Amino acid sequence: MSNSRDRRAAFRMDVVSKAVCNLKADGVSISGPIRDISIAGLYVETDEKTEPGSGFDIEIVLSGRYSQMILGSMSGKVVRTDDHGLAITFDQRFEWFAMVPLYFNTATDYSD
Picture (cartoon, rainbow, N blue to C red):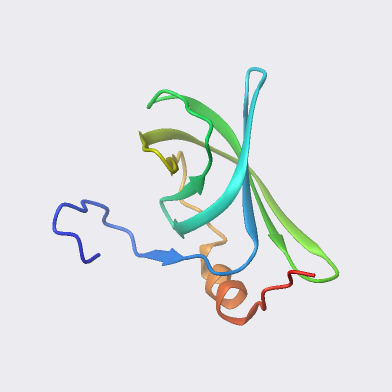
């Protein structure tokens, strides 16, 4: 948290592997790569715009070369938008966050 204006209390991890966030609500579907993630929320890169406070069902897809892991059954709301994407806060703490560093620190970029 190098920015003194950054008010997030949770440790945030930059995402360097292929991880996608799918957001769904009332006929709206937004998908994009995850830029960073924490136990409290994430930032998804997208050109789609939505209002702060908009609620979504959240699915995180972690991709490997031969398989995927899908983390779902989560919900959250948009807390900030900018020209590059959306910041989402989870309604409940991301209980699988402890395994995220394993994936993000060991996964190879599998661009074929």
